[in-house]
Image (cartoon, rainbow, N blue to C red):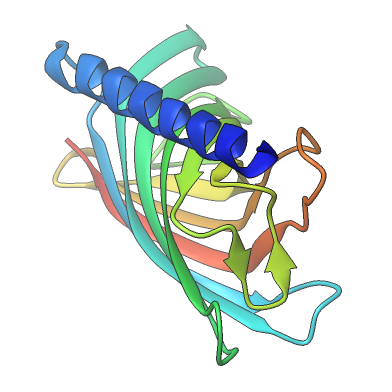
Length: 189
């Protein structure tokens, strides 16, 4: 009975994500940033090594000041591990991202960023020896980035970060899935 309830919750979350993504894609975008990502590394507290690649699209930007920007975006992530069974999953996420800039803009604007509590649908609730209770998780990512002047504006974006998926202890099984080193490269257009 509990498994059926969890499947219903997962289906509901997936439908909500699809509705939210479609609403935001059909709105006029205030920010357009497209990034590709790749990375991986050892899973803490586990003998497995995880790898990832994906694509992110930030479609909204809210400037609180020249030092604080909030981005909203969607993300597709593929995660693989080096185990024989349960060795991959796909994740679709919606994320808020806070960018903190140390100074006013210059030739290449460095910044610190945090993505937290990005609701995600993961296609499998197990990756190697890591277990999640169901297909609902949150994406978290923290790192350092820079917008680099290219063709007379800050068009190029480079990010280095740590990426994590877990359900924030909302459900009983919550062994986080980590990629300790991820590089995102893309364009701001």
